[in-house]
Image (tube, rainbow, N blue to C red; front, side):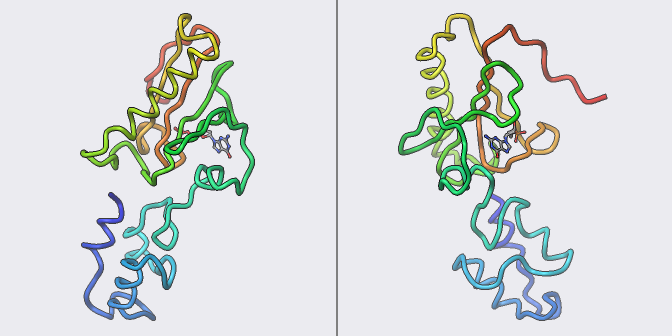
Length: 171
Ligand code: DGP
């Protein structure tokens, strides 16, 4: 988990935290409140790029919270599914867990159901929409080389036409 970096990486010397006491910042992170992202290059790397004040805030969290609109096609207690804003196929739906999980790397080993639920929900959606037999593709991008741009775990469901090859590095 990116947050582990915060826990183990908090400097203990006050001089490393310009204008703030090290213990104050570390304690605030543990509580999830207090001062926001610390200033200075050395401090920024302690925070996951999608985090703010120790709380996940991505565009997908805002969709889950209904802070911004989306074309939601499915929702239950564990996940939400909505149409991708820039579809890469005739059908392009994103399945997103409600639990904070930045990337596939961060899925707890004792909670594989987080990923399983996304895949099963996508398959159910494909069956319900009538394209399961024709076929579809599910994709999970992870971090930079995987092309991940939104740091809340999500599964892409692509369908509606025969899809081309994928996985080719950018030229
Ligand atoms: P990825 O590159 O795997 O992190 O995919 C992120 C996807 O999220 C990308 O295909 C575009 C989509 N997306 C980004 N912002 C929004 C948004 O505000 N609304 C919706 N519906 N989709 C978005």
